[in-house]
Length: 123
Image (cartoon, rainbow, N blue to C red; front, side, top):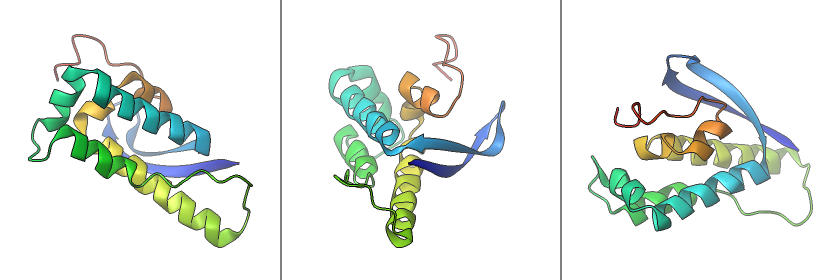
């Protein structure tokens, strides 16, 4: 089942708002990429801390707490789907509020944005 998330970001190519339609598994892969980058990439962990008073691990925890758990059987009840969509929107909003996360290739692909070029990465 595809979930639609409305994004409100400033992007020179997209304007300030657009929608993405993704499966739950896409959100789970995004969470996995953020978690892996925070553990395996010291530069990413350092960038997460820039402008923040909290450690990188805490920033990632704050984002990941919004990812709802996977269900074993699909549930099509309206209340469940609404709650799940709201949680995924919050997860996405929290993740994208961190500039370091916006530079991850997996995140940019998830958002249908072009990759950050090396010379753009310092911006």
